Length: 176
Image (cartoon, rainbow, N blue to C red; front, side, top):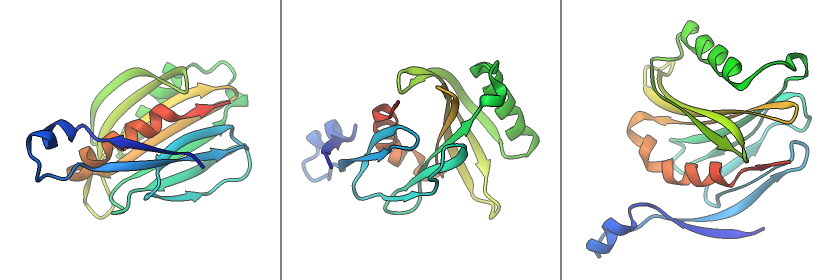
Protein backbone atom coordinates (compact mmCIF):
# COMPACT_ATOMS: atom_id res chain seq x y z
CA UNK A 1 0.00 0.00 0.00
CA UNK A 2 1.56 3.28 -1.07
CA UNK A 3 0.87 6.64 0.54
CA UNK A 4 1.01 10.21 -0.78
CA UNK A 5 0.42 13.57 0.87
CA UNK A 6 -1.63 16.17 -0.97
CA UNK A 7 -1.82 19.81 0.14
CA UNK A 8 -4.95 21.70 -0.78
CA UNK A 9 -4.94 25.04 -2.65
CA UNK A 10 -5.50 26.67 0.73
CA UNK A 11 -1.78 26.28 1.45
CA UNK A 12 -0.86 29.72 0.10
CA UNK A 13 -3.59 31.40 2.11
CA UNK A 14 -2.34 29.59 5.20
CA UNK A 15 1.19 30.81 4.57
CA UNK A 16 -0.14 34.33 5.07
CA UNK A 17 -2.00 33.30 8.23
CA UNK A 18 0.08 31.06 10.50
CA UNK A 19 -2.92 30.33 12.72
CA UNK A 20 -4.95 28.70 9.94
CA UNK A 21 -4.84 24.94 9.52
CA UNK A 22 -3.96 23.57 6.09
CA UNK A 23 -5.86 20.38 5.29
CA UNK A 24 -3.57 17.58 4.17
CA UNK A 25 -4.63 14.23 2.86
CA UNK A 26 -2.56 11.06 3.06
CA UNK A 27 -3.42 9.01 -0.02
CA UNK A 28 -3.30 5.25 -0.43
CA UNK A 29 -3.79 2.98 -3.44
CA UNK A 30 -7.07 1.33 -4.41
CA UNK A 31 -6.89 -1.52 -6.90
CA UNK A 32 -9.60 -3.61 -8.58
CA UNK A 33 -8.19 -6.36 -10.80
CA UNK A 34 -11.59 -7.37 -12.27
CA UNK A 35 -12.06 -3.91 -13.84
CA UNK A 36 -8.34 -3.14 -14.16
CA UNK A 37 -8.60 0.04 -12.06
CA UNK A 38 -5.97 1.57 -9.81
CA UNK A 39 -6.20 4.99 -8.19
CA UNK A 40 -5.26 7.00 -5.14
CA UNK A 41 -7.77 7.96 -2.43
CA UNK A 42 -7.54 9.70 0.96
CA UNK A 43 -6.73 7.14 3.64
CA UNK A 44 -9.27 8.64 6.06
CA UNK A 45 -12.16 8.18 3.59
CA UNK A 46 -14.27 5.03 3.79
CA UNK A 47 -14.30 2.65 0.83
CA UNK A 48 -17.03 0.20 -0.10
CA UNK A 49 -16.55 -2.25 -2.98
CA UNK A 50 -19.83 -3.37 -4.43
CA UNK A 51 -19.14 -5.43 -7.55
CA UNK A 52 -17.04 -8.47 -8.21
CA UNK A 53 -18.05 -9.26 -11.78
CA UNK A 54 -17.34 -7.38 -14.98
CA UNK A 55 -20.66 -6.54 -16.66
CA UNK A 56 -22.60 -3.48 -15.44
CA UNK A 57 -22.25 -2.37 -11.86
CA UNK A 58 -21.33 0.12 -9.25
CA UNK A 59 -17.73 -0.86 -8.55
CA UNK A 60 -16.68 1.23 -5.57
CA UNK A 61 -17.85 4.14 -3.42
CA UNK A 62 -15.47 6.41 -1.51
CA UNK A 63 -17.05 8.58 1.22
CA UNK A 64 -15.62 11.63 2.94
CA UNK A 65 -15.07 11.39 6.72
CA UNK A 66 -18.06 13.72 7.27
CA UNK A 67 -20.16 11.56 4.88
CA UNK A 68 -21.13 14.80 3.08
CA UNK A 69 -19.47 13.78 -0.18
CA UNK A 70 -18.79 10.65 -2.19
CA UNK A 71 -17.02 9.52 -5.33
CA UNK A 72 -18.67 6.58 -7.13
CA UNK A 73 -17.23 4.54 -9.97
CA UNK A 74 -19.61 2.66 -12.29
CA UNK A 75 -18.74 0.56 -15.33
CA UNK A 76 -21.13 -0.68 -18.00
CA UNK A 77 -20.22 -3.29 -20.58
CA UNK A 78 -21.26 -1.72 -23.89
CA UNK A 79 -20.72 -4.66 -26.22
CA UNK A 80 -24.25 -4.22 -27.62
CA UNK A 81 -23.48 -0.58 -28.49
CA UNK A 82 -20.27 -1.09 -30.45
CA UNK A 83 -20.94 1.94 -32.66
CA UNK A 84 -21.70 4.25 -29.74
CA UNK A 85 -19.62 7.40 -29.54
CA UNK A 86 -18.79 9.39 -26.43
CA UNK A 87 -20.85 12.45 -27.53
CA UNK A 88 -23.86 10.22 -28.28
CA UNK A 89 -23.65 8.52 -24.87
CA UNK A 90 -23.17 11.79 -22.99
CA UNK A 91 -26.09 13.49 -24.77
CA UNK A 92 -28.35 10.50 -24.12
CA UNK A 93 -27.36 10.46 -20.45
CA UNK A 94 -27.95 14.20 -19.99
CA UNK A 95 -31.33 13.86 -21.75
CA UNK A 96 -32.18 11.01 -19.37
CA UNK A 97 -31.26 13.19 -16.35
CA UNK A 98 -33.45 16.02 -17.69
CA UNK A 99 -36.43 13.76 -18.45
CA UNK A 100 -36.21 12.07 -15.06
CA UNK A 101 -36.16 15.46 -13.29
CA UNK A 102 -32.74 14.76 -11.75
CA UNK A 103 -30.99 17.61 -13.57
CA UNK A 104 -31.95 20.92 -12.00
CA UNK A 105 -29.32 23.06 -13.74
CA UNK A 106 -26.41 22.12 -16.05
CA UNK A 107 -23.51 24.29 -14.83
CA UNK A 108 -20.77 23.19 -17.23
CA UNK A 109 -19.77 20.59 -19.78
CA UNK A 110 -16.14 20.17 -20.88
CA UNK A 111 -13.96 17.71 -22.75
CA UNK A 112 -11.26 16.13 -20.61
CA UNK A 113 -9.35 12.86 -20.21
CA UNK A 114 -9.95 9.93 -17.91
CA UNK A 115 -7.10 7.45 -17.59
CA UNK A 116 -5.59 8.93 -20.77
CA UNK A 117 -8.77 8.44 -22.83
CA UNK A 118 -11.20 11.12 -24.05
CA UNK A 119 -13.92 11.91 -21.54
CA UNK A 120 -16.66 14.44 -20.97
CA UNK A 121 -17.06 16.15 -17.59
CA UNK A 122 -20.27 17.90 -16.69
CA UNK A 123 -21.34 19.58 -13.48
CA UNK A 124 -24.97 19.99 -12.50
CA UNK A 125 -27.28 20.59 -9.57
CA UNK A 126 -30.08 18.37 -8.38
CA UNK A 127 -32.50 18.12 -5.48
CA UNK A 128 -32.45 15.06 -3.19
CA UNK A 129 -35.72 13.29 -2.34
CA UNK A 130 -35.49 15.06 1.05
CA UNK A 131 -35.32 18.47 -0.68
CA UNK A 132 -31.59 19.22 -0.19
CA UNK A 133 -29.70 20.82 -3.09
CA UNK A 134 -26.71 18.80 -4.33
CA UNK A 135 -23.98 19.52 -6.84
CA UNK A 136 -22.64 16.65 -8.91
CA UNK A 137 -19.69 16.28 -11.25
CA UNK A 138 -19.69 13.35 -13.64
CA UNK A 139 -17.04 12.12 -16.05
CA UNK A 140 -17.96 9.63 -18.72
CA UNK A 141 -15.44 7.79 -20.90
CA UNK A 142 -15.39 4.80 -23.25
CA UNK A 143 -12.42 2.63 -22.30
CA UNK A 144 -11.99 -0.78 -23.86
CA UNK A 145 -15.38 -2.44 -24.03
CA UNK A 146 -16.80 -0.47 -21.09
CA UNK A 147 -18.33 2.90 -20.38
CA UNK A 148 -17.01 4.35 -17.13
CA UNK A 149 -18.99 6.83 -15.04
CA UNK A 150 -17.11 8.69 -12.30
CA UNK A 151 -19.49 10.68 -10.10
CA UNK A 152 -18.69 13.11 -7.29
CA UNK A 153 -21.64 14.44 -5.33
CA UNK A 154 -22.02 16.61 -2.26
CA UNK A 155 -24.49 19.10 -0.81
CA UNK A 156 -23.93 22.34 -2.72
CA UNK A 157 -22.45 24.16 0.29
CA UNK A 158 -19.77 21.51 0.90
CA UNK A 159 -19.03 20.70 -2.76
CA UNK A 160 -15.89 22.91 -3.02
CA UNK A 161 -14.50 21.54 0.26
CA UNK A 162 -13.71 18.10 -1.16
CA UNK A 163 -13.05 19.12 -4.77
CA UNK A 164 -9.21 19.24 -4.46
CA UNK A 165 -9.10 15.66 -3.11
CA UNK A 166 -11.66 14.50 -5.68
CA UNK A 167 -9.63 16.01 -8.51
CA UNK A 168 -6.49 14.27 -7.22
CA UNK A 169 -8.40 10.97 -7.11
CA UNK A 170 -9.74 11.32 -10.65
CA UNK A 171 -6.34 12.40 -12.00
CA UNK A 172 -4.75 9.29 -10.47
CA UNK A 173 -7.13 6.78 -12.12
CA UNK A 174 -5.49 4.20 -14.37
CA UNK A 175 -7.57 1.65 -16.27
CA UNK A 176 -6.05 -1.30 -18.13
